[in-house]
Length: 216
Image 1 (cartoon, rainbow, N blue to C red):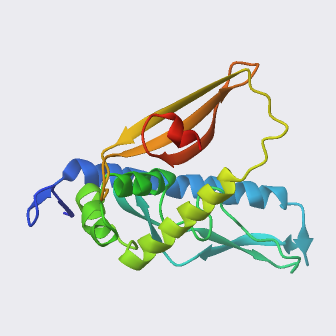
Image 2 (tube, rainbow, N blue to C red; image 1 turned 180 degrees about the horizontal axis):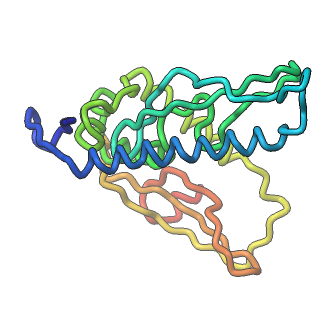
């Protein structure tokens, strides 16, 4: 039986329920991948080469593990063979070639960082949450992810809003209990309301406090 780490360092507990959920996830994912590849084969079922189907199943890619909220789930993505050599390949929408962790885990990483988890502590923290097999998040990997977040924020901050129209704007300072060499950090947020009543975040910037100084 697999072991998962508890929140207490050095202690392990049996967790048959998590094992059951993980096994169920593996079986469901395998069935879903089977449906995907069969849909591809059906689209080319009428194509033949020398009286045989041109596109057929051809085993699996090497097994890999995907990091999920219930721990690492092993997956084997099917392959197809294209006898017509026209470049037909199976690409799963569920499990893209370079997927290593689910979106729920990806979204957790910046939250952990904002909560004060340092890059060197990510591995231990994720092991406590998702089990000891939670891997692939060394300090170097986490550092690269942080750079990606910063790049994405930079692009978002410079987006063109000239075609947008807002009927109401809110500006406020939001405080977070995160690491700082000075006082608690204040993040200045501007939200706009469209004529349809939809609220959109327009800007997020570091602020001194909830005052006009942050508008400069």
